[in-house]
Amino acid sequence: MPTTSDFGVRGQAPSHPELLDYLSLRFIESGWDVRQLHRWIVLSRTYHLTSRVDAPEDIDRVSKGGQLDPGNRWLWRSVKRPMDAETLRDSILSVSGLLDRGVPKEHPFPSVDTWAFTIHNPFHAVYESAHRSVYLMQQRNRKHPYLGLFDGADPNLSVDQRQATTTPTQTLYLMNSPLVHQASESLSKRCLGTTSDVTARLQLVYETTLGRPPSPEEQTECLEFLEAYAQREPSDGELKAWGALCRVLMTSNSFLYID
Image: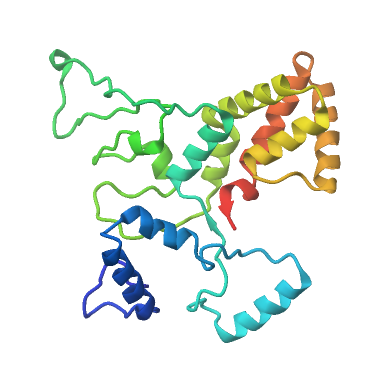
């Protein structure tokens, strides 16, 4: 439904009203079971569609589909999209092993006797956390710097749909952020401690970050990269080389985008 903030008479009609009626009826019959509703959706064929075009028959299918339904109204393919800010941060923490799955504690606000806040000098703080992004502190007077950079929702507004952007500052953050560097170092240490076989390490890194093994071409390029990088570093060359490779994979389009 294009008008996600207006379900009334002034909004556009849904593209699949029969599907909405069907899901609504099953939702009621299930006893309003939200988990069951989610299960129906994620197990559907439409949810499993991809935007990738790999086989020759895919090229013909995309060509015909683009002519008949260029706007994808009938959901014949998936649309490649970037992960939202929270999902991206959680994914980096998760694949690196840095994600804290425990119950987060309260934020360490300053003591009351130190308060000197006014309407022109409101309280503002950024607290580092290894928990999921849903637990990051949100302040209406100022966006969290990370969430603001990656199109997080404006805390002053009711946001029905986010606008995804691609900016140079996002790329610079991924290149230089302490979070990404710590995550890549953590993952590289885990791989180095798992096995001494370079090929097995490479497969582990790819499966952990991208969910698939490397292709023969990627494997050759990665091995050449690791050798060249390790020779350039005077100390801890192997660890730094694997950390750099992990950083490359964590900031690649294959990691950042959902196909």
